[in-house]
Length: 255
Image (cartoon, rainbow, N blue to C red; front, side):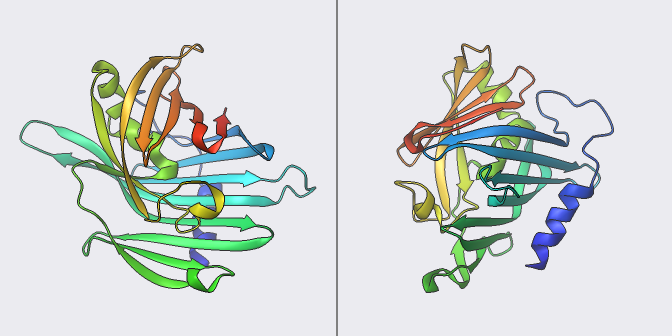
């Protein structure tokens, strides 16, 4: 549990600004934004914080969902994810990539705490999953193989940054009929089935991302298809996330 404190402190104490103006198509900058999450429970405050440490080539994000009905606005859910920012070189070109490193997810269900940490072991191509929960089957350490993939891997909560930094958003916009394969690492594994319906039993899912034109609000629309479901990402013209819509789960997250 010490890592939770260190990652949270890192995100809260570091300055939320970068040293130069970013390229809107690919470069990332630190920020802290407030959204509203709407689901069957109603409207919930949804806070999304990004920390970019350029010298360390590190991207850290923190997502917090709180309970507005309580005086102290107790947390319902918190996800902290850390990835490395790098690049892949080939004979023809270079592509920026975000490499998932470690995530920590905590959710409170019916007043009970469920915690999971996912650490990516690149050398062994493994995901080391550490669980702490009230249920015996979800405790201890387990290792899952990281499947081979021709596409990119991203933590679920970092998909917007992953797509932007790798220039996929811009490339798909230029070629509307094309798509890109995406490997999704679920930080909430193995508790997804407790929160959402028809979710995979694995820690990794594969999907494809498409460009879907301009919305009524004059924003770029991208569709992510995975596990028989579709999620919609809306971005402003500077490629900042504006909306996330997951119709199958009855979820919308709007800035």
